[in-house]
Amino acid sequence: MTRRAPQSVGAVFATVARVVLGALWLWEGTTKVRAGFGAADIGLVAAAAGPNSRVPGYFALFAGDVLGPLAGLFGVVIPLLELALGAALVAGVLTLPAAAASLATLLLYWSSDQLITEYPVMAALSAIVLIWPGAARRFGLTALLRRGRMSATSRWI
Image 1 (tube, rainbow, N blue to C red):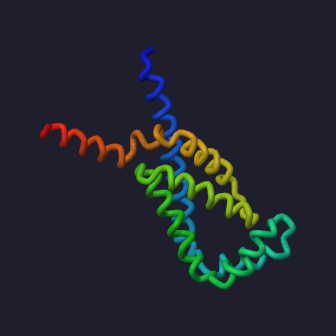
Image 2: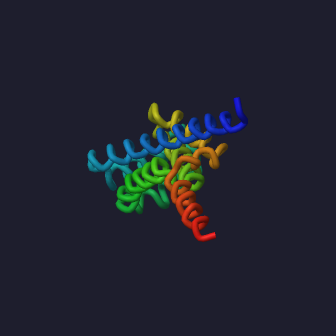
């Protein structure tokens, strides 16, 4: 086996993790859009944060001071964020920032005691992409565009 083969296997593994994570975010965002997710949903999360002993104090403060008063804004932004994360990860664009935002978003959801079955899987996939970002973006749109630009440049050299 050549030295290149393990690198390719790692790149395929990390790319699959990235694409599956992106697909899960697209599913989450699409589900929220179809369900009419909005201010009322965010309001419920904010209202439930204060009396919930499983919610850390920092999130209870955030929910009371920011999330609740801006429920309308968050009701629009959350599904859009999920769709943007999904699109970026599936396409392989801004892979490292998208994986970091993915993990941060999941931690925010966990802090609000909103845990669903997919979130631990999504956190593990986010970690894979964060640990091996180069491998995860090797077969992405950004890498493809860079290869195309480099081969176009090399024709003139």
